Image (cartoon, rainbow over all chains, first blue to last red; front, side, top):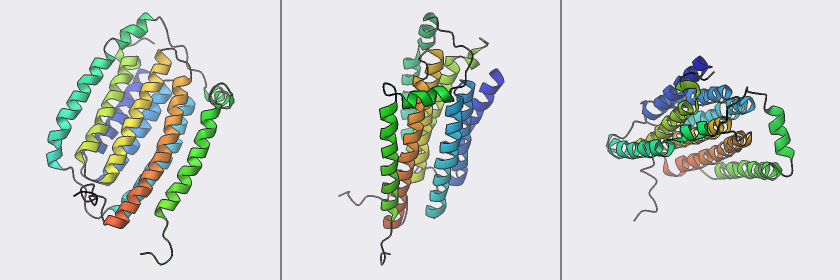
Length: 167
Length: 106
């Protein structure tokens, strides 16, 4: 469990570093792929087996493919980090980091004091499926998200549609 | 099982915090609109990791995972729409540089 956590955490963080700081946008996109894989692996180490698989399918297999298509279709010149913006980025990131550390202070202690010990991970697919179809659980969000996906699909196609005769 | 900080909640919070900060850095330091999208995805994943980590270590059952699942679905839909918008911007402005999309500016 330790090695798996360290491996996937390193993958996620290295991917994130590549996304944030690499010169080439294609490398950054592949860094994002690594980061998303790393997060999927971290889900697996947390016992979220179905969620990890969904992450790989939807994020790595969907979003990054879309992103790479967009990169391919819109890259004219090499994207480079705008040097001046580092002066804005560094203090903002620093402030956020301090805020996060402040927010997380004592969380570990509070949870340990609550006495909850995580049990052995169990398969979650069936339980998640049942929750999605239970009226008092997540049925309504499930149906709403289905409608939302339909709207997003139609909207995306409408946005890029070219009418005949348009340049 | 209770090894060092690696398998505990703190380890996951550190990773998710770092991913969040990397996402913010990506958004702030790049001019290409697609980089902004990548940064947003990093931020969403960091939040998701928090959800699942707290679900496991805080005894919240499957609610955290369910939330994360919906976030994944919504992020995919949002990425599709955002990329459609980026394609439109590229067609109308000739570039995806966020500094060039300033038609509404005085």
